[in-house]
Length: 405
Ligand code: ARG
Image 1: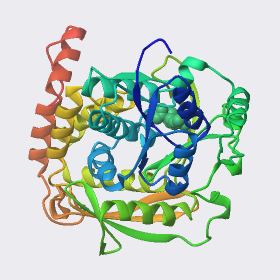
Image 2: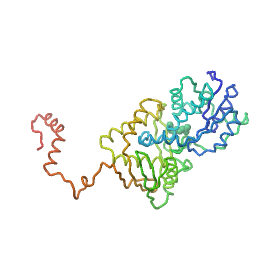
Image 3: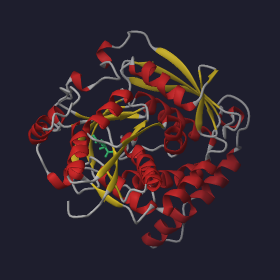
Image 4: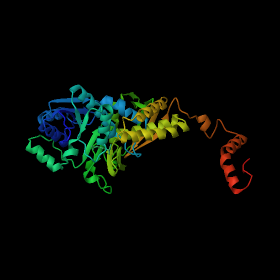
């Protein structure tokens, strides 16, 4: 380590890298405070805490941040229809600014001069941590031990063994990161983009082949752009996400497999499971299409994409993210209503939608009765609508007749 520090707050997952990091810091005379965020990843936090102390931490923070994560990170992502490159619902990306914010708070409280994380030098997460921490407190140093020591997994295991560290039994061939918004599966057999992801990569979803033979219908209620009820039952957003992960996962919904353009200059093959995210984002977008005007929709797509890219690219701290988010929230003030979906063998299809603010009228749109423009009205509209185009074509042909009327 080339920076001199005396006390560090480490984002501790309980895995091999960060457990070795605790010992590695203490051997250099650095005091280590560990911090583990509970954001619905389903690990045994008591055991994580015990291992932190065994490895040499002087203090441990285990904080349940599920509601904060959902309210401040997942909710804006829903309103922004956030799917990076059209596929990835940003589950891991959204958690990094929250964890970074807490690292900074704890470091300030504990009088630490640095924070640390277990990211490698090839991933996006290091970028998100480093920039968010610096944006919040430029005086804190950010240390990434794995970037410094560059050991193989084997070397880490040997180091851990020689120091008597207890490492969680994990035979996973994959690198997993998960929270209630989704599960990222990287490495091992999925690194080759040609290989179909093996069944053992998945934990939250059954394969569509094994899903029930009968479809299930569900109704998702929205208020101001956020899901607020499931099948008529009012629910908090976290609870609703947990419930949907299980009910949509049972139908094989939420498996995502795509080529992802990383921040760090290369593409990687990424596999995700995100049943609730897939269902909610599909329903939300559909409801927006019922309520928002054509111009709002077209403009919002740009804002959504920019917000999504900023979050993916580690720029949560950029002022533009905040401004866009506020605009997107305002554009969702009338996105209230219900969406009915059919879940069946890996697909979630919207089969119905309604809203008190629908910019839709059966009277206007229906073919059978109601409002019908006269021939004259229709021709007048079409003439004005096409005039720019027709005049330009006529001019280029060298004729004066525009060709409508
Ligand atoms: N590619 C995704 C992202 O950049 C997933 C990252 C998963 N992180 C991990 N440490 N396995 O957001």
